Image (cartoon, rainbow, N blue to C red; front, top):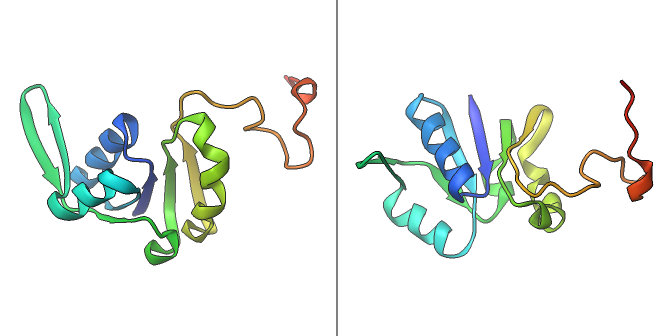
Length: 124
């Protein structure tokens, strides 16, 4: 399965490492020092005193990664709006998008035209 993780912080990095260890083709949309470190050393994880490393493809350009089977969005809520457009090339017709976020903004599950705080209603 082709899986892209958007955001390689604590949550995204842990998920990417686990998915790569399970044999999936993992790539990451990252930036700055994180991107440079993953390109140079691979994705490194220290857990319970044990170091592991996974060679994953990382880029700051989603188009270079292409459409994925699964996109894990592991950003903090406030970063989502700015990153949303840049993720578009990762999405194909059958791509599953899985949020793994903290600080989810109130408008996350709203339609683009319905983003008022009073519009969120339960249907259950």
